[in-house]
Length: 115
Image 1 (cartoon, rainbow, N blue to C red):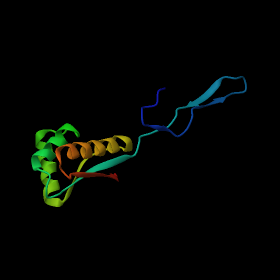
Image 2 (image 1 turned 45 degrees about the vertical axis):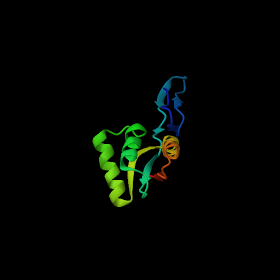
Image 3 (image 1 turned 135 degrees about the horizontal axis):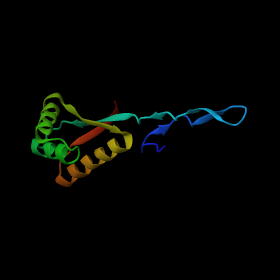
């Protein structure tokens, strides 16, 4: 049985054998799903709303309507959740946001918090 990428095996399969060597019981490994982390965008006074929508559509694969909704939440509330991902994915998305913002000269910030 293949373990999904990013999952952790918490127990190895074991077999119980009878007195004549036959297998009486075989237990399957327990597969634990990876912990999720939220990616948060933070509002600032310089990054344009259009750029935030572009980021949400391109990096977080949001539809135009969902990207606009999240952007407005960030604008009005000061921060907003872009999605929840395994840690390595969340970390990569935050780095991509910072890279794209720097390329365009915006101070847009993103962070990670445990879901």
